[in-house]
Amino acid sequence: MNQRSVTLDKITLEDWPAIHSWACLAEACRYQTWGPNTEDETRDFVEGAVKAWSDSPQRRFSYVARLGRDVVGMGELRVRSDIQRQAEVSYVVHPRVWGQGIGTEIGQQLLACGFGELGLHRIYGTCDPRNLGSARVLAKLGMTYEGRLRHTQLIRDGWRDSLIFSLLEEEWRPAAQSIAPDE
Image (cartoon, rainbow, N blue to C red; front, side, top):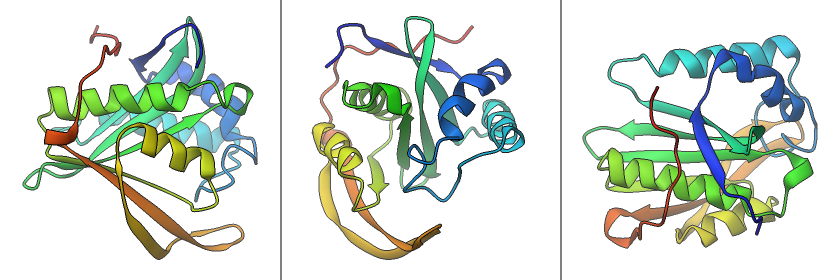
């Protein structure tokens, strides 16, 4: 685990170069439907994420993860059902800081946002079964492994299965969180 804490800030247009520093890397997007990104693809993604902050109702909450002033990853919470009070969590961490607990810190803060601020009932996350690091993060977050969904994503090397994990509001245990307040 790293010694400095990770903070989450609302994504801004100025964050695109930092995001592109990993979005252009094959290793960072190996198990994703996106990437490696061109600069235009990364800019388009960031523009959409920034715009989502002004949607009403807001369903997408995108943050950059910082160690000090350095953007080292990002996390996103997407409300999938208002009626069922469910959302999906996702995160990406720059490969240069893999293995330092940053994904887990991002996940903890996203869960705090979902359960603590949005009053959600269930939050889930998925990952490629080959992505052992991501599966470990979801388990460290206290999420329960629910099973394997077959052929959920078409990626560069063929159809990808997804492992699904979830956490219910009564299972969530708040920890000290550090999402930056709105400006």
